[in-house]
Image 1: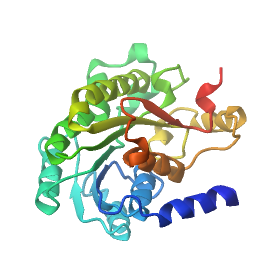
Image 2: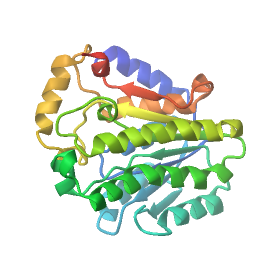
Image 3: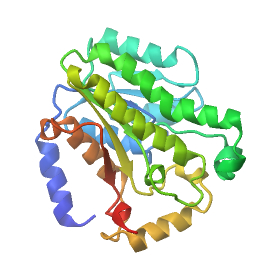
Image 4: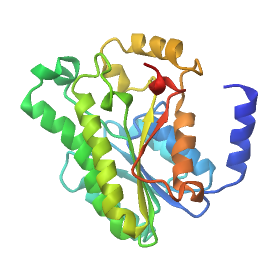
Length: 268
């Protein structure tokens, strides 16, 4: 990142524009996660945080990050386990009483379904991918709604493979397409509550989730070669965009997908 954008980021952080806001971030796996980049920017801009971890195996990797971020709530959240997401929101209600921001950065598909052709995917694998990667965002919205009496912002992470065929993205393409459709319908249904709903679509990033895709290194190389800006985005880029969508600067935006990809998505 060159000096000029760095200076602009410093200026934005100094504004503390999210001071007093309360943000839930679900999906941090390690310090390279998109969710961590978003949480870090939210915190630098003044927000209080609730952070989750997947399970006891993941906890030692996430707990130091949660402490670094000064998270007020740190709780397990495996959306495939009945009651865990509900428990997180109950802790938020008890701790804060309300919520301003909820960010969903979860995606999963069984490896054999993810790495094989869509036409060969199993029914069970498709259901699991859809439930964890998509319907869990619907459940999050349902739980967040009563905690946002003055309005708020919901966000889910998508990818360009939702709209165009990306080789080797396979099963996750239709799942992310469903997620973006969910964003539009939730924006419509929650708009009168002043709850805005967004999909954020980053370009290829070196994350643990992305490492499960076949030939991912090729995708990264092609992204650099084809993107007009000629660089890969990083997790701070995604965090800054997500933060913008939570501010009054974006108060009339809802239901759309915002690309953070150096312009890659505009290329034929």
